Amino acid sequence: MIKLTPEQIAKFIDHTLLKPEATEDQVKGLCDQAKEFGFASVCINPIYVTFCKRILEGSKIKVCSVVDFPLGANKSEVKALQAKLACQDGANELDMVADIGALKSKDLKTFEKDIKSVMAAKDKRVVLKVIIETAVLTDEEKKIAALIIRDCGADFVKTSTGFGPAGANARDVALLREAIREKMGIKASGGIRTYAQVLEMIEAGADRIGTSASVRIMEEIC
Image (tube, rainbow, N blue to C red; front, side, top):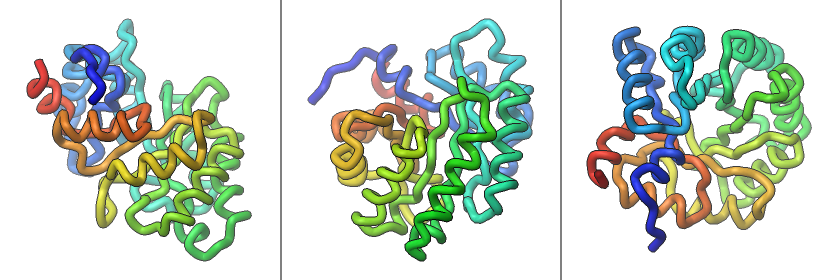
């Protein structure tokens, strides 16, 4: 098993709060915790991008906004506009939900076009992670999706929204890593609540971990 310091583990984590009922005070608390533990980013809904950017000013913590979360079933033009506005508000990273229905329908051109529309709309310096909701896909669909996302130029493929029928598992992370090799990052997200799970995902090939249980995980290892 790999051995990482608490500081190294923190750098893998996108500290996440995506509940629709999240309050401004809770989001501020999220940012304060991110600064305390040194997480890679805070992952929040678009309405809080400027708020988080202001609180995190002067720190190295990135602001990650979601795009068409959690369904990904909107028109590509809407997703592109969301991405553009999030970048204008100061987002450093975007987690977009892909058009899973198009993928399941084997309409790969539409699936690809959807990703490319966001790629074209975002600031070039902004990292793009594409969520494919692995729990509803076959292994073959996961591989196809990952390769298309890689070829579109995105930075990460992300396993789950956390709102689907299941979250991340090490088997899916390993499958995605085998498909894309080292050409792109993998973000494991959904249901990750323990230090053991974090290590399992990293060992399987994950480069980033999305979790709302970040503080609990850090307290477990500190």
